[in-house]
Amino acid sequence: MIPYLGPGVLTLATDGSPIPAAPEELVVELTKSATVPHKIRNNLTAAAQYIENFKHRKTIAAAMNKTFEQTPEPSVLHKWLAERAVLPLVVNAWYDDLPQKALAVRKNWGMVQGVSQAEHFGYWVNYFHSDSTLVPNKEFLRDGSGAKAPAEAPAETLPWETLLYQPIGSVRPASNYVISDSDYVEVLTEIDIQTPIPETVQSVRKGRNFLFLGCRFSTQLERNFARQIMKRSSDQHWAVIEGALTKNEVKFLKEQKIELIDMPLAEFVAGLTGQAVAAATAEAAA
Image 1 (cartoon, helix red, strand yellow):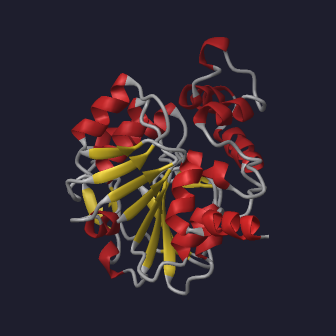
Image 2 (cartoon, rainbow, N blue to C red):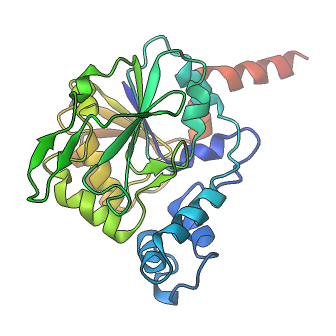
């Protein structure tokens, strides 16, 4: 099973989350760095695009770096996942670095992160070793005609037992962010034919199930990324979401054969890891 972590996982951080745990929270932080028209102040990608157009791309990067600079310690879930004997792939669909911190206990792992075409034209992703050093790009470089040309060795040769995939980038190690309208347009133009999805991810996901934690599917972007990342995997998946769903979410879950687990994320994680249950038992015994 492949864990697919969304921004809501940050609510599990033991010392509280000083960083945004939802797009609606992140756009508030981002618009502190620049004045944005009222009609798009609550739209993360549109606000980022406005700042990029009228300030500079560096303004977005600086604001994101400041917002995600001081991240909390990894949660019980992050640590539990990192300690699994077999962990071929983890997807983290947010900009934090908690998975990197948790995976530090492992010896053989690496990262692949989505990158913005505005800053890395021609490349969809960058690979990094666990020590944050950049790996020569293993994907395909687009030439001036838009055709694909092989860039060094294929991705399947990467020698890691665990791969952390961050499709929209991360604050660490290199401040890569897919966040503006133009960033997403570039990716979504090609994502149906899987070009932006790393070859390693396409290989590992075959026949596997996904478990969505801390995710919502209320926007088209969230649904598109999840749909394309899980393409050609298994025909059964699960998502832990508490409470009422939107009509689009209900339709998406049915379409993708994702079974809903309607319960608080913290309660599910306690059952999964046993740690919260053990703590409650010890307290009762005392």
